[in-house]
Amino acid sequence: MACLRILFTRLRTEEKLLKEAADRLGIPCVMQNVTDTVFGEGDLFCGTDDVVLARCVSHNQNEGVAKLLEMQGVTVVNSSRVMEVCGNKLTTSVVLAEAGIPQPRFLTAFSQEGALSAVETLGYPAVCKPVSGSWGRLLAKINDRESAEAVFEHKSMLGAIHNTFYIQEYVNKGSFDVRAFVIAGKPVCAIARSSEHWITNTARGGHASNLPIDDEMHALLTAVHKAIGGEFLAVDVFRSKDRWVINEVNDGGEFRNSIEPTGTDIPGLVVKTAWERRNG
Image (cartoon, rainbow, N blue to C red):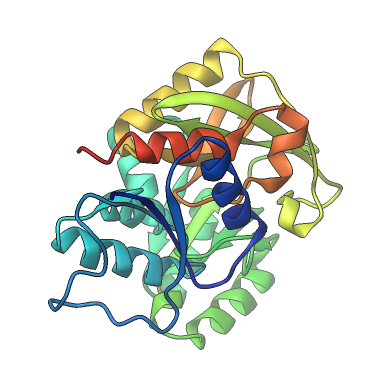
């Protein structure tokens, strides 16, 4: 019998909530820790009638699992293609730019010297981000040339992936930004994340409160889904110069701090949407 498989490498609150939602909705569901699992061309990891919710903590591992299962004909939510777009901030920015979706200005360089030129082109302050990462880790707000030189020298020593310098204009978004959720192609809810710090992630102590989705944001989120696809997107949005702009798009975002403020059954909507994908 077909089932919904929730794959994980660390059992977080989100995965538990997804399992509880599946049980509540009568969806046959199996939780599976894949930390020690071997994937490849041999025996099928699961039935091709199953649907997989890939929830590995590491994005690279999650994308790898998705690609290997898709190779065997298994439906994975989100698909590896969506993971690939969302897992690299530069790729996300390029896809958004191609679709004409408003976002902060960004430049990319592949050397310390190029990065210095890029940040001075954008102007101070600016934000340097790793192309891959979450929870606001390794973000650096660069206020002047001295700090730019220090940040870029430090990053250059961290390994090859950090030698892609992704630099974004600093957006004066006030005391909050927005995390919005798009499920089955529809914007369903959003929270305002408030903090005295410029990084407002709830994982870093930001306070969450409900934010109704207005017509402008609804249209913007719908455009993001059209450009990227996916059954579940968590989209970070800024208010800048009297308009909404897209900061980042996440394919496997955490949502536990958004359920109560919005009154939205996010895990229920996610498992229902995934289960409806089982026939293609």
